[in-house]
Length: 455
Image (cartoon, rainbow, N blue to C red):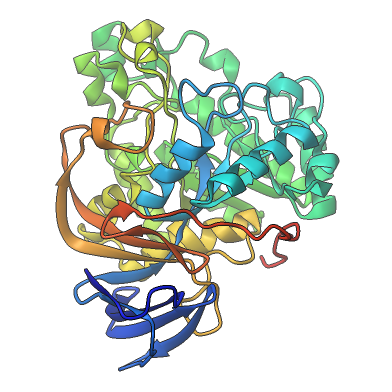
C-alpha cells in the first residue's frame, strides 16, 4: 500500500483499486466519518490517496468475545493495550467480557469500561454485563440498570463460568427480552469438568490428565436452546468446540430457536494432540478437541450453523502460563492473529470467500451485539469502519512484537497468511501501512450511543 498526502489536514481518504469483499477493484472515498463515494476513477481534491491495488477492502471486524482485563487485572491487559491489538488485527469494535475485577455486574463498572474505551480511541469498546452478581451463579446482576446505563449493554455473560442453574438461566433469558438483550452462555456443566485439564479422549488417557468430556458442553447447550425456545428469547453460545454441539445448534435453528453460536480461531485449527508437548500455551477453556471436531466446526461456520468467529482473546501474565500444566491458567491471545487464522482455515482451504469472511467477522457479530454503525456494507453513506487486507502477505507470529500484553499465543513461531494493512475507525486511520497510526478522538459532546434495533 502506498499513500500520498495531497493536502494535510483535509480529513478525506481516497482508497484506489481495492477489491471490495474480494470482488472487482473499486475506489472508496472516506470523508467526515462516512463512505462518501464508491466506484471507478473517483476524484477527491485534497484527499490523502491510498493506492490499494492487490488489497481487499472489508468492513471493520467486530469481536463478540474479548477479555480486556481492566479494571483490576492490568498486569495481564489494559483497555489501551488490548484495543491497540484489536486495531492492528483489523477490528473496529470489541465486546469486553465481564470477568474483570471488580466484575462488570453494575452500571458503574460497565460505564467505567465504556469510558476507558473512548479514552483509548482505537476501537469501539462495548461492555458485556455479567449475568449474575460476581459471576457466582446465585442471583441476577443489575441487568436492567446496565441496559439503561450510558454503556447501553445488550450482551450479558458470565463467561469463564457457566450459568449452570436452569432456573436462574431461565430468569435471565426472560429479563433481557424487555430490552432486546442476549445471554451469551459459557456452556460447561461444572460437575462434569471438576479438575479437568484437557479434552477427554485418547490423548488425555495417554498423558494421564483429567479429561473434559464433550458432553459437559453439549448438555448445557441442549438445555439452554430449549429454555430459549420456551421463553422466546435470544441465546448466544460462546466458543462452540465439539461436533456434537454443532448438531445441537443446527437442530435448534431448524426448530426456529433464536440461537446464535461462535467459534474461536484456535478451535478452527488446533487439536488436543498439541497437549502432548505439555506446553501450557495450549491449555484453554473449552479445551482443544479432536481433528474430527475441528472439521465439523469448519463445516458449520461455512454453512451458517455457526454464525460468528469470536477470538476469546484471553491474555495472561507470563508467570501464569510459564509453569507446569496443572497450575497454568487457561486461555490464549487472538486479536492480532484471528484474520490470518481464518484466512488459512476457511478461505485458503476453499470453504469460504471474503464476503463470507465479512459476514462471520463483522456483519453477524455486529447484529448480535446490536451495534448500529458496525458491520455495515461498504457503500456510499455508510459509516467508514473499513479495513484493507493484503491476502498475499506472509508473516511469522512473534508474541514479543505484539501490541497485546499477553505473550500466550498458540501460533507463536508459525507462518500465517494475510495481514491487515490499514484500519479506518469512524473514518480515522488507526492503522496505516500495517502500523499503529493515531487513535480516534471522540467529540467532547458525544451523545450516549444507542444500540441498533436490527435483527
